[in-house]
Length: 256
Image 1 (tube, helix red, strand yellow):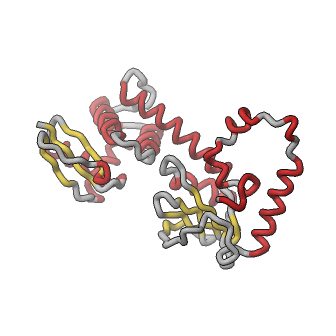
Image 2 (cartoon, helix red, strand yellow):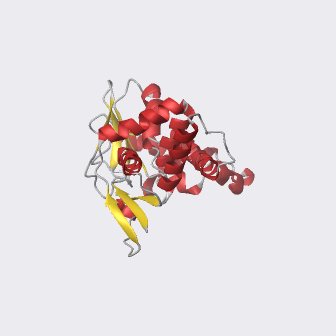
Image 3 (spheres, one colour):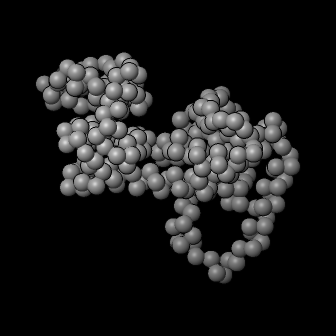
């Protein structure tokens, strides 16, 4: 019979599940996030209660036996939120602990190769968020940007934007996952808001009028400098995929 460990979807929850699998010496296991779990008659399930101490012990083992590249790979792939990624991560950690050395380049291992491919997708999504995030100044003098990436890359954006906009108040909010990063000129904090449904639309109730006017000017400039006869739509969409246009004021300011 298969043993299924159900965790809360957090990174510490996943590490806690891995600790308990080792602690109980259970074989034939799978790990699944609570929001993906579907009950089956042919399994025994274990509900995991996230425990920071247990999670830290697993993470310390990863750091001890692996290299920074292993830790980065594990965390970044966890952020993909791909259904079933937990099994690949568990297998990766199990092999790492067994070999007591880095396996990040051991592409002969199916799980390592799969995670390397997932990591590439995470890297592309992060890079595009770095490039396509557009801030708008609110009436509270906070530069606000909303995003809805395919993967949960918001934690990976912190360093880039803190360094680039160190002298400004800003907030980047993931409207799909309902949390954001807020920089108060000293540190970055995780925040949760009850945002209005029209937050993606330009609104003078939230944003400064000067900001709206500036974005309209920028859109007009973009349109006036665009030479339609030389346009290469296919190439353009390769560099700026259509799903990112909603972030760009020069693309579709009035219909975000």
